[in-house]
Image 1 (spheres, rainbow, N blue to C red):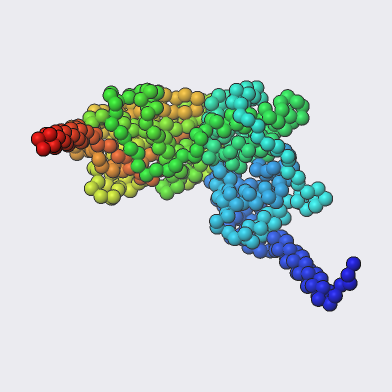
Image 2 (tube, one colour):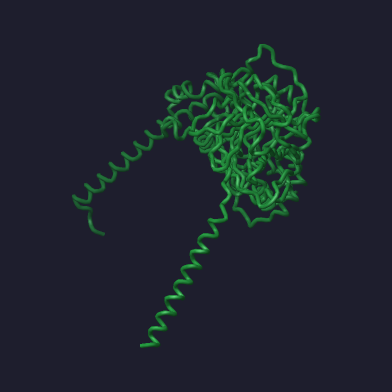
Length: 526
């Protein structure tokens, strides 16, 4: 073995210095990630408004939210990779901070705060609970294994056998028999998740994320962990994976893409008046999100209807709109009245005294301008104004009116003037396993050209949607709203568009044959 020379010793010394420097940098990064002083600054600025200065989930905005913001002092976290009742890992906490929690008011902060700020606030959150101070037992993530091949039959079998349908309903829309009784550990009312909207799942909507929730449960909520059933050999890990696959299959393959325009193609025959007419299967639906009405008092921050699917057809004489939306109850529903009262008691409003629960119906409103605009101008989206009303169709689930809708002019959110019955669209509605399907049909042109909107093909017609779930305490100004979008009635293609090319081809072919024949004749003579 050769001796180490001078240059080698310098190299070793240099490497040693580099290692020391790297360790120093690593320690600095680690310490900076635990900088609770800077974390408190970030927390007070961005988090305390909801979670409270002491982390108890009682910030000034909390009273308007369901579900409530997290109480950090109890260290009970829903989205984890750890076992039921265990603390989350730092990676779990960071994921919730980065991505937010769908279905709640918690946004994702990855694009709003720097990496250092998010690490600092994570460290500060942990100071609210003494449970995190015990460093002898660090949270350990569960081993989830790999997803097996899909088996929807087995997944459905366990969906029924372990009681998922009791809360989530037969088709997963949160309308099970136990749904009206659900509340979280703090006593606040809570909805069973709508499994038909995976893009809104708390903790992620792919199969792996659903499986993790089945294994860990959602601490603080009625959603249990099913890991015990694996330990008890009631089912296997693969069978629980199949359940996760089945749950994922209840939603569309891809999250809906928001579009600005609803295209209404020309119908291939009579317009479908029934919600479940097979003709609707050939019309692509468009998704439009709804949010709480928070502009006009009484404001509503916790709407139950997340969005509507809309399809449209016309035949040149009439328009048919099919609106579909998930609703956990067919309101008015007396079974949901205690739940409604808990919602009204839990969510702060602008009323001096919270209203008493009543059997309010469900309602769906379709809004248009009174005239098709020449440009992009539109009335005020929140039901127009006194000087510029909007034209609306209003449908309600109240028994005496469930078979029809009314048309009228809204001159602001609190004033609606009904038009004569002849102006109203025909309506057919079906409620089925937590979903409303409604078809509204009206002639494109009506005799009342002063008040009724006269629909025209080939034009972009502004349209907006409003929804109310009576069992969620929604009535009056408490509703879910959309912004303006557009409805476009496709113009039927004139027959000449198809005939003219055929005639042109025939004439060209005929002339070509004539020229060929003449050329052949000249060749023969030569």
